[in-house]
Image 1 (tube, one colour):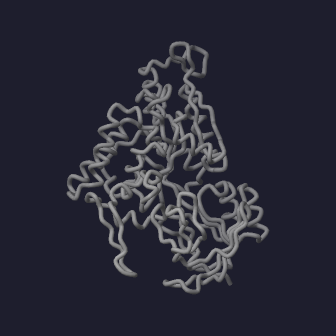
Image 2: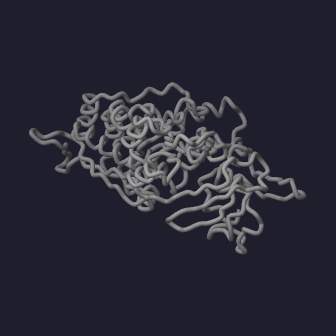
Image 3: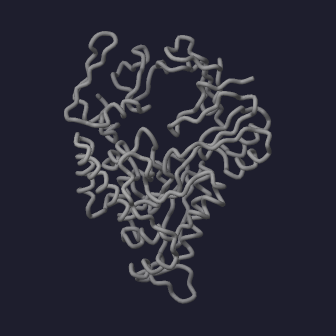
Length: 409
């Protein structure tokens, strides 16, 4: 609570008035207002978490880090070498079902192809996550028959945010044309080998309050060209790139250069947009630079996945009001941005289910019609493991690693 400003992307933090310990085993939380997702947001891995008093900093806030990683989880950090590895041992005092494995070593290997080589050399037992290796490598390992290779159910939306306040993408018709120009079916087939499903909306219809009948922007090159013509971007005879007032229709697309999958998607989007006369400059950057760009709004297009359960939709829409995320920068210059933010504030506080559904409908419909996002696919995690591993199961959250039930024969 002493560090509220760092966490104002989460509505719960603003709603909390004070917290008091009522004895050794009871925590009493007082809210300033009703806040319907309070219990759900207490399950998030951050910013609210359990931490031992011995690990808590003398400053009274964790803004500068913690004394030691002492929590209530199933594992104890026994060794950490920065940029190399972290070793976790089973917590023999864990309150729940103890893990089957006694020790897990997490290795830091920045390059995807090096990860694959280490896996094939038996230096790694499990590769897990999204974008950790290329889908070509995943397909090769799966098709070899030597390993177990699995794909999770959909977890979140892989999307590109489109800046409503910068250059050509200020025009809604340009944003709609971008949505019409990208051949998602080809991306799903050629890049994902059908391991992911095409996304037509920013939130899946499986997300609470998001099944509202939004009409997809179907792939339609001719309609995209018509929209660009209407926006004043003409294509001179014999030239590949459209112009307006003597300026070419050039956009930048930013992504983390460390993410193999996003790089492949970026190249496909670049090729598709060139077909309708849009020149796209790819900016594959170090991850911190990419994160900074999300916050400062220096982008036309930027990769911006949703967060999956339990963040959707409430924590995601709450963060849209805060300048720390690409959603805010992308939406900032919408003429109805103040109305969107007001409705987000209302939807988090209302205790009336019918009103809550209507507010979410208004928010999500406006963002869809304004084409603030280019949804690509409903993202999955992949797992490749040696066949001596047992007990594997996917987790419901994208960033949870399923170590608890794993065993090794």
